[in-house]
Length: 602
Ligand code: PEP
Ligand code: MG
Image (cartoon, protein in one colour):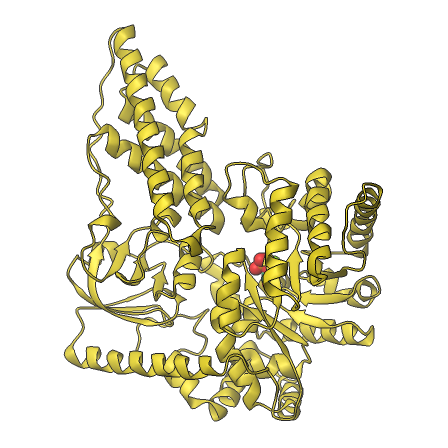
């Protein structure tokens, strides 16, 4: 049997399945009689929450130091337990409806889940997993059961779950976890991020996997293509063992050269940089040959916290990053919250189209004090090694840049007045992520020191498709001629004004796109640390002359499909091993990301 999902973290796992049972615990339902019974039940509920908090605290302490940042995700669960919509609501239901504690809790959890699921986006979905995991823990305690789960895994296994909360994911032991398969989740969920940083092959969105797979089944999980083979034949097993060995050998080989500069055969240098969400990722970025940090997504520091970070906490975080990377630059993007990246720090807005709503720079300009706090921290940290670059997300017009500059001047004046050292010449750039920014790139270029093209959002807004909506996923085409023309327009406008142009969307880390991005004269590519060795390897084997010639041809093409075929042929001619190892379904699977084939073929 073959199950298809979304390839979330590349690599091949072959081994036994361990089905993480989140079996339903029977919820008794009865009415309480008398004030004393109600008071007892309230106390029982409160004690269960305290015990759940203690359990979460114990897990937090057992987490390895390199995943300290991810421990914050556990704090989110602790926070959920005390959220009035769950904690107060449950107590209220015990007191007013005279419900028993389990029933009261289950009802309040259901309401909370409904709230999140109505939001219908990736980040809200990852919060549902947290609500479920936190609630599940208390329900089990109230039922007098142990919290069964990952701790029951006795041997190396591939974990199968309907959903894996971030709290579960950070408990994964690399030594015991061969792979991960979940029915829910997307390419950018926390679970996926953790699996990638642990280098564990993962497939998410594998419909019915937890129903179709039983503990003990033998599985092959291909984290690149999103394929799961259940109880494979001996032939399948030996085929995938061979692929696994080849893949490991290939990665090992190219990683040996990851520290060499990304220079084409005709001596053109491209800066190859890393995107990170937490400072702890710097080690992986450096190991994989990152020459700088092209994007630090600072909003993650805000997302998983119990308390709103103050200026000192932000300063320490940015200073640590700057020190770790010096003298290489680090590009700190100001808060890009809103749309799919939600926090509880701001009042929840009723937005029909959150992706077009009060998000990102718009949110910062709305909540100026918070914005100023972050800007102060960035400017101060810049004084440590003078290697920080400041970058604004989702700029749609010059007015937003001018408004930010005014705020920045106020912040600088305040720091000067207080004699607090800061970087007075910090490089200042914007992300190009919406079509209007492309159209006025020449005007924006007069105001800033660099551009960084955020293709994840630029593709969504250019093609008019929600990047997290599976129904239109087939239209998410990075090689759409409209997208390519936009990238060229931005690169040309930047270069005409004498500023460098970077690209930091997922496109930058996809080897197939490398010759096109080189030919479009992108100065630096910033990507997930795992992709760095492969991309650097490709850059070193191309010549800029060939890439430019290729791009001229590509710009005359009319469909993404045509461009895709040409790009694959171009890369395949030079690197057949890339295709054989990472896209074995080619040419059946013309676009692995957007058009998942029904079944993998050997
Ligand atoms: C982008 O939109 O391409 C980008 C890099 O930003 P994010 O993925 O964080 O929206
Ligand atoms: Mg973006």
